[in-house]
Amino acid sequence: MDKELSTKFCEHPWTFLEIQEKGLYNCCPRWVNHNRIGDLTPDLDFYEEWNSKRSKAFRRSILDGSFSMCNAEECPKIQNGTLPTRQEVLEGKYGDQMKFILEFEMDVAQPPNTINLCYDKSCNLRCPSCRKNLIQYGEKNEPDKYKQTLMINKRLLRMIHSKPHKVHLNITGSGDPFGSPSFFEFMKKIDLKKNPEISLCLQTNGVLFDEKRWDRLKNLHKITEHISTIISLDAGIKDHYDKVRVGGDWNKLMNNLHFIGQLGLKEVRLDMCVQKNNYKSIPEFIQIAQAHDFKSYTSRIYNWGTFDDKSYNFHNIFDSKHPEHVEFLKVLNKDYHWHKHDWGNLTDFITD
Image 1 (cartoon, one colour):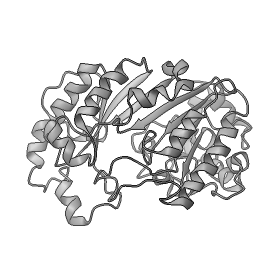
Image 2 (cartoon, helix red, strand yellow):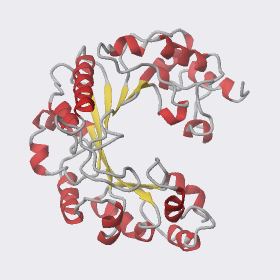
Image 3 (cartoon, one colour):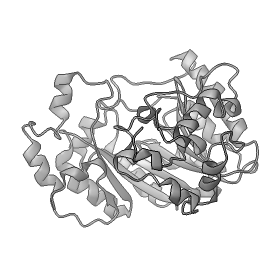
C-alpha cells in the first residue's frame, strides 16, 4: 500500500459512471486499468450494475486506502496530488455527501451525479489522431452497434428520468453528439419535466453545431445556463485545420462559433490537440478564443492506436529528439495574455 494514498480519498466510485462500448466504468478506463464494474447485456439494469459486486470492490479499494484498482501512473489526481485527505473529508471541507460516503456508505441509492456517454463512436469527421476511417453507426452501417446504442439510450433515459436528482451528462467522449444519430435522438428525448436538474456538456467538433440542428433541440433551450460545450478546434488557421480535422469545414465552423457564442451557454471552451501539423498556430488559436471570450485548452497528442511508431514520432513534437522540438518550445513560450487559457499537460514545457 502506498502510504501517501492510504490517507487520501476519491469520490468517483460513488458519483461517476462512464458508459463505453465494452462496458461500464466508474472512472476513466485508462485510470483504472480498464477494470469494468458492469457489462452491456440485453437485460442491462443501470441500478444493479451501479451497485454490482465489482463496483463495491472498487469502492472498498478506496475505503481501505489501497487504491488497488487504480493506475497511479495514469490518474491525474494521483499524479498532481489533488486528491483530498480523509481528514479533510471528515471535517466536511468537501461537503456532506463526501463525508457521508467515507463514514458509512457502500451501496449507493442515488444514481451517479456524472455520466459520460462514450458508447457511440459515430462522427462526421475522421481526424488522424482519433481514427483511420469515417465511423457512422446506423441501420445500414454497423447495425448491431447501432442497436446497442439505442438499447443503452432507452435504459439511460429511464434512469435519469426516474426521479428529480442532479445529474450531469457528458456527451460524448467517443464521437460527436451532433454527428451521431443515436446521441442526437437521446438529446431530443431528455425530458426536463421529469427531471429539471439535468445539466449537459456537449463535446463536439462544432461543424454540425449550427442554428438548424440547435432548433431541433427545443427541449434544451430553457436550460442553456446549465449547458457547456467543449469544441475541438485543433488549429488556429485554416491550413492547419484542414490537415488535422479531415472532413471539416473551417469557414462553417467559424460561423458556428459566432452562433454558439450568442446562445448564453454556461461555458464554451475551445480545445487543441497539439502536434507537428498545428503547433505553429497556437497563437492564432488562443486569439480566436479571446475574440469570442471563450476558454481555451491545449493538450499533447496521444497515440490511440491510429498511428504506427514512425507516424507517431513524426507528429510527436514533445519528444526532445524531434527536429522541430526547439521551435515548438519557442512558440509555446511566447507572451500570451489570455487569462482563460489552460495549458493542460503542456505546462511542463513552459519555462517562464
